[in-house]
Every structure is written in C-alpha cells, then in structure tokens.
Length: 138
Ligand SMILES: [Zn+2]
Image (cartoon, rainbow, N blue to C red; front, top):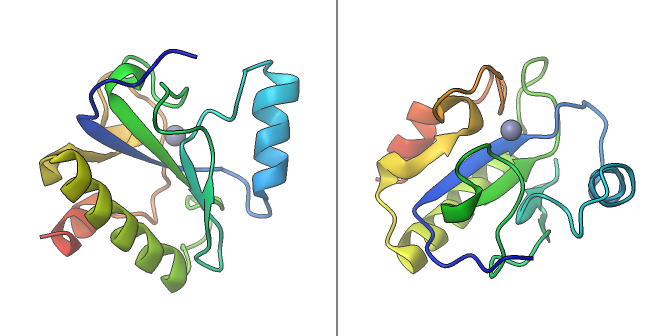
C-alpha cells in the first residue's frame, strides 16, 4: 500500500446498508473486491464504537480522486433511509475534532463523500447534514 503523506481532507461515508457490520465491510473490500485492506481508515457503529480500518499511514480507497490526501471514515447504516444514532454523531464529532487538530485541516475540508468533485452519490446519506457537522466543529 502507498504511504499517505499529507492529509488535507476527511471524507465522511455511510455503509449504505441498514444492518451492517465492520466484519462484513472488511469481507467485501478484501475478499470480494480483492483489496489489500479495508478501504476506510475508520468506522463507527450504531453504538458509537469506533473501529480501525486501514492504518492512516496508508492511502485508503474510498473517494475517487482524493484518496492520496484524505482520510475516510464510514458510519455504519443507510442514512438515506434512517437517521444516524446520537452516539454515532457524538463519536464522529469527537473523532473529527481530534483529526482537525492532528492534521491541521481547515473545517471546510471535512466533507461528505457527495461534496467531493464529480460525485453523484448521496453518501453519507440525506439524513447526514454536513453543514451542521461542520458547525459542530467550530
Ligand atoms: Zn461514500
């Protein structure tokens, strides 16, 4: 895997399935897609527990054109169909605050997958308000 040299963006994703698990996502990325490791750097389940995916020392596979300078975090669930849990959002905010400090990333560079250039997906889902999340980081 290639080293991740400079983190300029954080991309927020959802797993797109209502019932999902870290194990299933890992299985999909590694066994089915044939990647060396899971595409996301972190995952947050519905209980607000954070899981490590690919080491943030390495380039992930989660957002076209921006993998080289971003970290990917995936919230488990389908947020086009349901709301994230309060605990998920709490953990996400705490996580983002830490990374903003660590990598000195401007808050405007914390983006939902759909906010990156040329993305036609709804990811991380219509129930995730990225403006609100960025405001919570200020
Ligand atoms: Zn996504």
